[in-house]
Length: 114
Image (cartoon, rainbow, N blue to C red; front, side, top):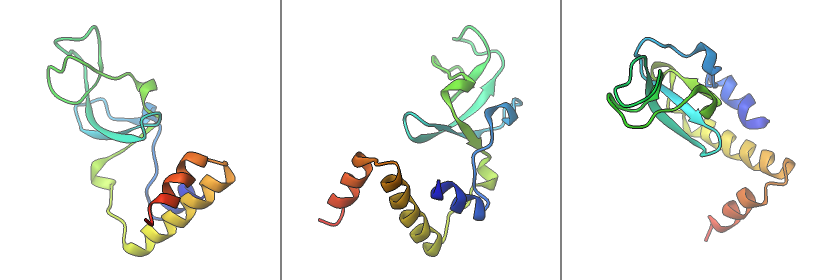
């Protein structure tokens, strides 16, 4: 994947969930199937859940297990990319979508210039 290669060049990549801190620090966890980041922390004794899990807020009625996420980024290591990097990522995204024959992504890109 071109997008992953470019993100790594800028020091941005998802770490495995097995390496995520379980000491109450907040992380940006990536939910692959939903394609978004979730700000959460590891709660060892959640009040409303059966056992330890990733939660968005203290005493949250819902939590997440590691397998919900495909990786995480520490918020302190997350950087906003400059315009050149964003342009490179857009080109890489298009290349990746074409290589994977991702018609849905390509369709969105085609309609974005309207």
